[in-house]
Image (cartoon, rainbow, N blue to C red):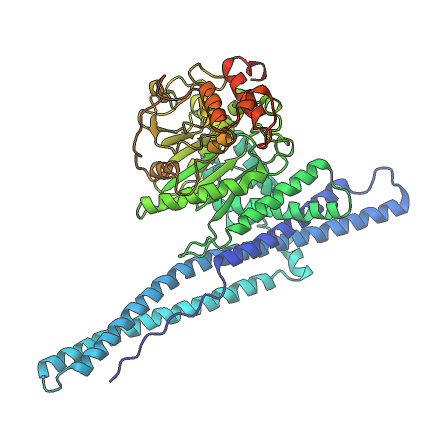
Length: 609
């Protein structure tokens, strides 16, 4: 008798990522309804209104507020149902992958059995008896596995019916009113006050402990009521921070787009809208980055503050879930970094993440781009007016940014699940000075540190001031002028960590182009595809040690003055020093500024610290 093959489970009709996207839209709408209800409840009619008309208006305000409150309660119920559906889909996705593998393997053994039967000697009683026994065993396995497949199919159907019934349970005015008057309704305002107190205490571990005690409905209510608070609170799970920040982002885009269309947008709001749209577009770029087991999108918006720093904005995004990854890295970019520079920096971290993932075997990787400090920036750009651009680039912004970054890492540590992740901090350019201040001033809780293109390490005199011995790694291109600001004298931003006497582990970096017009391009080349610096950083992220090269000693490298002069001559740019313009634009300004600043490094920025 021929054996029956086991059927594969039905296709997964809804992915976790699709469900999460739909939930974000519902949650954002619910936030708008909640805001409108609170505003109406608190304001009421103007105090100057009197008489019957005023009373009638007050009654209408009260009635409308009640209707909005019922709608808000209904949205909380709907989001709770959708969140549960998303969780179920993740479980179903993992189960389905396992079932598909088991079915394929068993059906393959049945195919082999059939081939063996066809080739067997019908007169060999012993062989025939063995085939009969194999048939019985395979049939038992197939029956049991088909039952598992059928159960999975029923569970998918049940999950869909459950979410439909849940949404239908709050799709009328009466059902919304019932949800609003339920005795166990979550008090979102009170929960927000409690969370704010935990955040203000500066203890993300306390936030994480408190959060773990919330019910699903309390979480849904709190995220809808205060997404800005939840999304930027260290210790809150990364998945929830992402949900909250996407809620704020979608709500901002909807509101600010309408104000723009109405001609009411202020300059700050215009920048805020740009920041929100850039965050949305960057997330969209990675919408197909899906966990193959759970179906969950692997792009997480961990910080969203589009109006911070006078409109420059604060933002952080992770590829991979930092709460569950084995190796986590967080990158702090430098000068000119603001919310609208998220996309390019995430691309750099994506390259690093992919390479680190190839190196670390079965370990998982999460790569965070963190731009939540007031990095020096200029609307005109570096080479247009370098002196104006860097007047404010003393250590003050790096000091403040270092405190914020250390707090962010503490929050990531608090929301980490399972064994502590191996955490690497990477700072580029002014971001390296910021990371250095996070370590010297704020006890940065990372396992390894990488400084690339560093103009100085703040108050750190040696590598051990930043990290325990052997855990500070430095990449410094020989033709990167920014890395020479701290040598041979101590520059305004501190020591050059690539100097041999600093004591860091210096890894190999491509020296870069020896043309004066390319010097600042050298400074931005550390994450280039196929570069030695990218490979070395991936080693560190993966918990490995990159090959070491000698640190700088006087006479072993070109100092800033010789680099600028030599690269100018090689470029055929002797006239640069005579102030003659050339077709490369205004690079002469940058080169001249670099040399001028190097000559009196250590004092030129002190007034701005």
